[in-house]
Length: 163
Image (cartoon, rainbow, N blue to C red; front, side):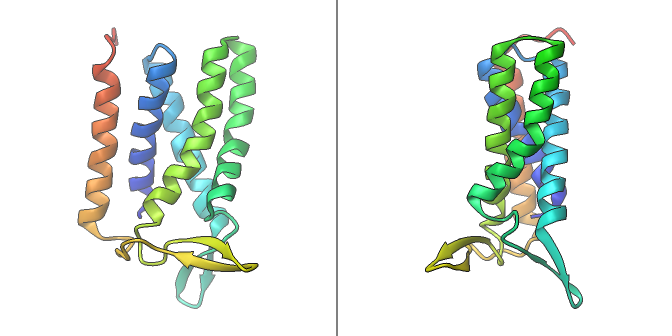
């Protein structure tokens, strides 16, 4: 999937999950946006290699356990800093949970592309892809973005905001 698709889908998912744990606010929306953008950039920047004239995914970040690890690596420093600034255990829990979810959401979208994600079989990396869509398929990217927006609106709908 395109990187902007990952941004919107992850933002919607993270904000929806966080809105169930803590009182949602505009600041939480900004925070989940930062987590979405930074983590998805880290996963793609570190997990892609140039091979000839093509960019290929690598198992460095495009596996389920490693994507979770990269998500936590990005969000744990944010969680610690926020906890010292605003000591709230629910917010801390939500940010750590975001770290677990954001990497998984990246893999969820990538598993539907033609190159898929990696998993180990008999000690060797194998790819698994469910639908083999092109990463830049406008319909599939549009549906994922729409789903992210729907999750975002669902989170907003569940709360009264005074923006």
